[in-house]
Image (cartoon, rainbow, N blue to C red):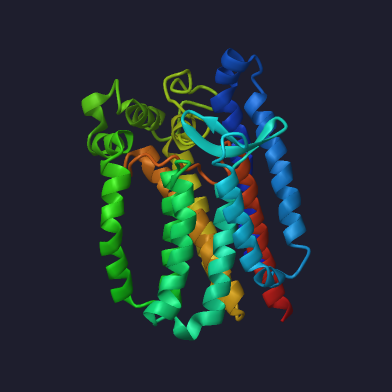
Length: 363
């Protein structure tokens, strides 16, 4: 599978290079105006990129199967971090959310770390309990209890987007393992009250859903971000207005270097640039699925499925939000958007995926 590893490495390298370019382009003026340093976000992004690269190389240096032994201790450690971050004297609060630990001048988001831990834990569970996966109490309920606990703590931060992503990853892994569809249908019915409580009873989340249906009805209010994103994409045309020449990044489009970086890519590089990004993620998902298909080890198989699902869903959701096909979720575009913890974890996941492929070749 060496050629697949080369393909995935090339795709990630191209996405990272694009990200470095577009983070500087989309954040330079804002950083200069607000922070007095037009390289502020770029320098921090490169720092996290170096941390992520070192971590990815480190995880490729040993047999990934060793992680299976520590799946339960890792889960307990991750849950402990999610509890600690909610304590006011420990966790850092920003804009009403308490999601970060402050380490020097850098922030660490434990919910991002929890994505990887949950994939390791569920992969371990499925590899051990594969023959019982169709049994409701023995194969279906235990991973749901763990997932519910983790997602509940993340929702307390609050962070609905990450909680939904973790839940979706677990569901995909269970589906691949052969869980009964009737069990999933029952789960869907049981979560309806939670959907009502966490969305319909939270005004700003309900507003996102309503605005998503027609953002132009309130283009200067709740729909401002979505309409500005669509203006950016539409302004780029086929070939874009040129690198560095975006108008929407000039304090029109909020989160231009994070959640809506694809909109700036579309404005500056046009439809060609946007489709290139989509194509790169398609190649990543396709090649990642090829690795999973060829893995004989059950733990490695489910872990590869989880990694490809996580990065693929993040990309699909971010792209969907940018073009107005999905409600705003606050998820970044993997390897491209500015983001510390998310970038490091994504790099580690790619290293883990390559490790699974390499070990399989050696068997």
